[in-house]
Amino acid sequence: MSKELYKLKHLEKTDLAEFRKKHKDKKIVFTYGTYDLIHSGHAIYLLKARASGDILVVGVATNESKKRVKTKRLPLIDEINREEQIQYFDFVDNTVLVDVDNLTKELSLLKPDVFFTLENDWITNIRTSAEQTIANDLGIKVIKTQKDEIYVSASDMINRVADVRIKSKVEYFFGKTKIDLSKGDWSKKKWSSLKTDIRDDTLYFGKHIHKAKGCCEEYIARIVDYDEVDRIRDIYQLGNKKIVLAMGTCDLLHAGHTRFFQKAKDQGDILVLGIPTDRIVRRYKGAGRPVITEYSRAELMSFFRFTDFVVIYDEKDVKPFIEKLKPDIFFTINEDWNEAATDLSYFTDIKDWKGKVVGVEPQSKNLSSNKLIRKATGLRLEQLFGEELNEASKTKPLKDW
Image (cartoon, rainbow, N blue to C red; front, top):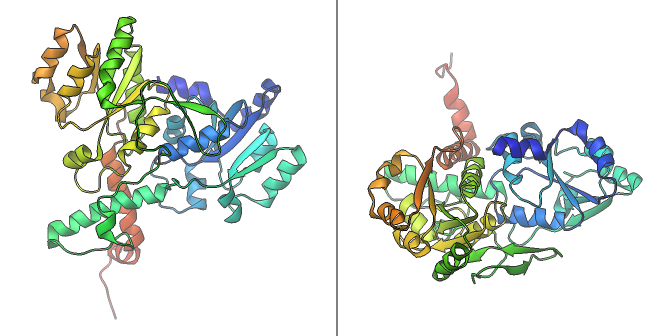
């Protein structure tokens, strides 16, 4: 599914002029970004951009251009997989890989009606006067939007998870100690997950229409309270709809996760996605996880095309959730950690109501949350101890004469 979707939405730079001709009667919006570690703030930004026109084309920063703009430490994830990730948003119509530090070529070829940007990018000179000149010459409307109060950068997320890993390693070898790796009050930041959602903490059943700040387009927040789960079953199974249940932390989200959930959706008509609370995640994944708080994780997943309902649950065992929903299919991953799952009682329960368990292999060989954490930690160490690591990497011993 992922490769087919990628081909459907991906544009080459050489396609942009023809794309403009093909959609000459449509209002095209062009924006850009890296989308390395994605969160709900990214989705909200893209939704605002889409609300400015009929077609949204998103330029995704190439690996090399991102390094030039930010640092050689980023991105964590390859350009193709970052591009693939945002294609699962229905409001992203097309994507193209771009040199994010110079968009003059894309503006000249695509001739969008709207160039949707961050105001801060003009202040910091990521966006240039040359791009403004082209926009003026072609009659392109430039929107300079401010960062939402929920804005969290990929660097924020990387540093958060890396600092916790570093601290745990230090304490393993040297014992408990006071270490401030976050350049702030570590004791206050230690257990605090990042908030990137714009809703309050109230969850809603069914179609709750919510307006993002500064966005005139409404979207459906498909989030239901745990106590309302049985209503999903009653409404949709009575309508002969096949309900699929899948679970996921959805914290450090990558393309492997979205491929998995798309496959889950392909199994039936209604996909219910269960997301554990911060308390449950912390219990199983340890200090510093999750990076993103539960409501923010739920909101992010509500934007994806494959999701029908998102439910936050606070149970250490998924059995009560499964029994409450009674899904037709419980969709799960085939990995070492859940090999014994078929022996658990709730698998027998599922068969009692003629449901079934479907397992698939992990959907990405080289992408995983653990790999992202390890890489983030290595990059953070390089940032903090660059001189020491550089000296240690030299093959020759120190010599004075």
